[in-house]
Length: 226
Picture (cartoon, rainbow, N blue to C red):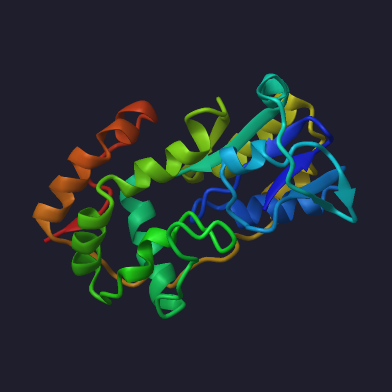
C-alpha cells in the first residue's frame, strides 16, 4: 500500500528499494497514517484514484479525485541503482520460486510486476535476457510509474537512513530519529553471487540510461561482470 502520513504526505513504495523498512519506521513513530489501496506497491496513478479520504478503519477506498486536488500532497519514495535493483529483483523472485504477481490487464489482480509472470529462468542472465525482450528498461519504467507525474522527493537506498532523516526534518514529519538509526534492514533477499554477461550489462546501460543520468547513478564497479 501507499501510506498517507499526517494527512499531507504520501509514501509511494517502489518494490525492492527498502520500502518495507520505511513502512516499519513510519508505523512505529506514532504518526497519523492511512493505507491507500490494498496492493503494497500501488503507483501514483492508482493513488490519485483513491484520495477522497473516505475511511473504513485504516484504509482509503477508490473514488476519482479531481485532477486539481492531486498535487496538494507531498510525495516521496525510494530509488536505487538500476543495476543492483535488477539483482535484488532476481533474488526476490528466486526466493519465492517465481511467484506470479497478478496478470497483465487484470485490474483487480494488478501488480507492477505483472509483466514478469511469463519469466521463469533461474539463471540471472537468462532472466535478464527474457525481461529485456518483454520490457526493455524495466527498472526505469517501474521508477517512472511512481516518479514521473508525482514530482516525488526521492531518497536513495544507498544512503537511506540519512536521506530519511533529512526528509523528516524537511517535511516536519516527526519520524522517530532513534528508530531510523537503530532499526535493522528488512525483507532482504538472499544475496546469491551474480556475474553479469557483458552484453546484458551493456544493454541495461542503454535501456536504463535515463535513470542512470537523471538520478546520478554510477555504472562502473557496481556489479561483477564476466
